[in-house]
Length: 128
Image (tube, rainbow, N blue to C red; front, side, top):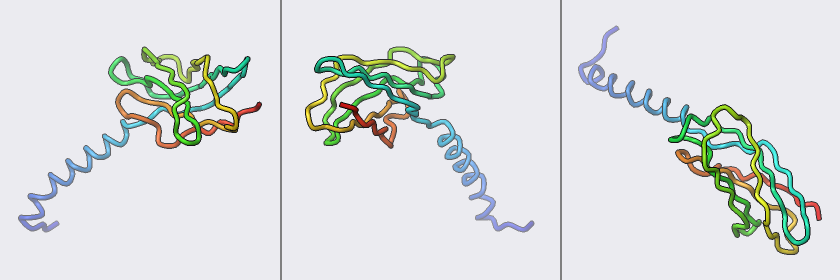
């Protein structure tokens, strides 16, 4: 197949860029929230959140999740202090979350040490 000199120069660069882009998108994966349970006791709530993430070790793992009111106010944060390479999915809880009166749902997002926050929050309807 005939190629111009410019095309022969451009092709290796284009192939390398495509490979890097493809590899980067394959690795980037924010945690997925698979389920949420919440129980109210007194004036506080306990949330149990089940996450899935392809943790690879201390350099790349799901390192937290947060609960936000519909207006964006952070109501709680659960730090995850170690990777869960061999425990997928996994569930962790956060107690003592105060939900202001009049709020019917919360939004929960998970965070990855490398890839950042999940882009789509998980909506959880509160049963009061």
